[in-house]
Length: 125
Image (cartoon, rainbow, N blue to C red; front, side, top):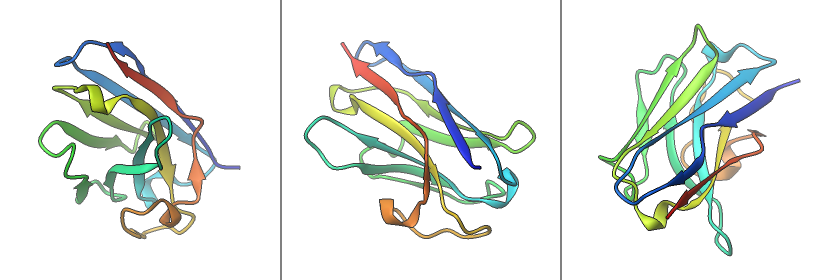
């Protein structure tokens, strides 16, 4: 059973930084793309960033490019999202995700991902 558990969210002032973590279990972590999405109240879930299984390719939404960095540690089965220069519009619940298929990158839509964590809230104050 695949489990994704996010952590690291919280309250932060505009301009500040946070690092989110997502611990994965139940499958071979080093063979899967990992993604981060976010959802603000009243809005649809949107793509934030993704990283392929070796970490050789990363993808970002235009709204976070240059401010957020996705990375992974396959030895720890963990993916990270370093968020710098945070803005009010970054307030959302952040979700970790992965597709069912191994060695596969399906793009930036939520439908390309099959497994989801419970989310961690990031709130700008």
